[in-house]
Length: 255
Image 1 (tube, rainbow, N blue to C red):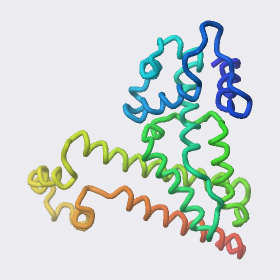
Image 2 (image 1 turned 135 degrees about the vertical axis):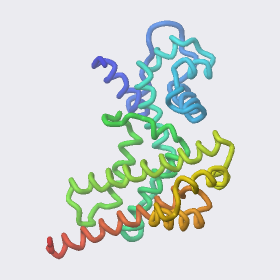
Image 3 (image 1 turned 180 degrees about the vertical axis):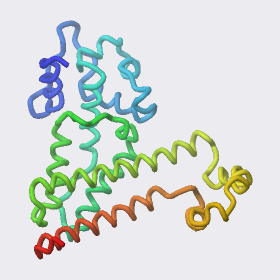
Image 4 (image 1 turned 180 degrees about the horizontal axis):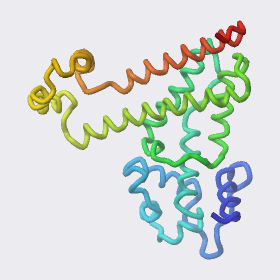
C-alpha cells in the first residue's frame, strides 16, 4: 500500500473531524462517503466478508464499479471504514458500579456488536485502521479499569484479553447459528438422527467420562452446546482471575 493511500484512508476515517476529503477529478460524485460505507456494511451484513466485493457495493448504490474507487482506495480500506463505523453504533455510557461490573460491560458490548455484524469476526485486524470510533471505544474500555491497580501495560493486556475471549466465544455462537440455519434442523434433531450410529461406535464403557459429561450437557442444553452460557461462565472465571491478580498485587504476596 502506498503512503498516499494510507494518508487518504486516515483522512476518510477522520472525515468528520478533518472535513470530507474531495474525490478524484471527474464528474460530481453521486453519493457521499457515509452512503458508501453504510451500503458496504449492508452488503457485509447480508453476505459475509468472503462474498463482499466492491462491485456489490457499487451495485447497491447504482454506481459503476470504478466510480467506487473515487471514494476509497480499495476493498481493505473500505472494510476499515466499515469497522470504525459500526464501532460507533453503541453508546459508551459513563462507567459505574464495581470493577467486575465495568469489565463485564466491556465484554458484553463487544458480544452484542459481533452478533449484530458477524462479518467483524472475519476481519484481519493485526494492524487495524485507527479511526475515531475505535479510538473512543478503546479510551472507554481503558476507563473501565482505570485506577483498579493495573499498570498501564496490564490495562492494555486486560482489554486485549477480554476482547479476544469475547471474539472467540462470539465466533462459536455465530457458527452454531449459521449451521442450524444452513442445515434446517436443530441440534436436538441432529442428535436424534445421528445418535443410533454414535451409540454403536462410541459405547459407554469406551468413553466413560466423556459419555457421562456429554449426557449431562445434552440434557441441560438440549443441544450440542450453549455458546452464550459458556461465554458467561468463561468471562466470570477470567474476572475471578483478574480480581485475584489485583488482590495478590495489592498484598505483595507473589507465591
